[in-house]
Figure 1 (cartoon, rainbow, N blue to C red):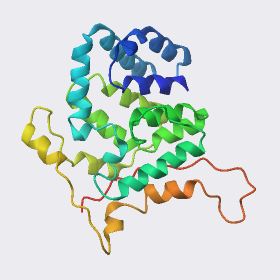
Figure 2 (cartoon, one colour; figure 1 turned 30 degrees about the vertical axis):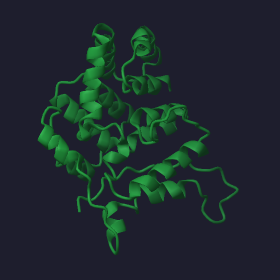
Figure 3 (cartoon, one colour; figure 1 turned 90 degrees about the vertical axis):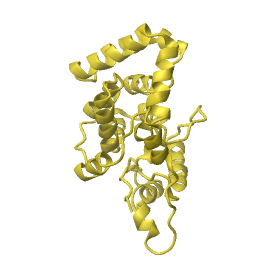
Figure 4 (cartoon, rainbow, N blue to C red; figure 1 turned 45 degrees about the vertical axis):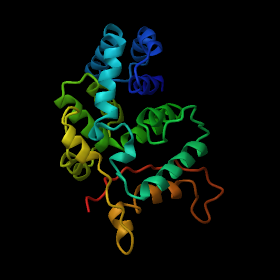
Length: 247
């Protein structure tokens, strides 16, 4: 699904190469015609915006949005595990999912970086790819809402992903994300508070609070067939992105 490769590229740091590829990106979206017309038009508007805008302005905008503002982080586990100790194991498990799928990232980014996740999804069969991008749907929806609030054209990418997946959103998980702080990039005090290191809990109950029974456990289980079923074709791994507990 080259459409996913386009959406992945649009969420990376703007470069001259990305700008030069604008006509090709638009052509891929038109050729595959996977996105609803309205969603596709909004993504094309972002492509046109990147092509017309001064490159340094685009880079500054990207940094303010995605690198400086924690609530807009493109690292999916930031919205799932935060700074809990489960995040490291979840990273290891996600790398294993990539490896089991025959995918070797060519970037030094962490495995939960959304453009990397979309790049992996683009290598899967269409039905699997669509199911895969739907799993963090509540995270994508929260990011879309936060970008829309800022009037950012990047919201189009997240709206496109949600439209493409057709997944029913986890209302409770989305509500939890909506309740989290969403400071503006020029609110330095609020940004410092948002990026403050969270307490890492140990002892009884810590695992439940951090959510080890969700993403990490499911990812570890994904690569193992059930007893007695080793000879059957392997099922598509289910990657679940459940919002971490606030406690």
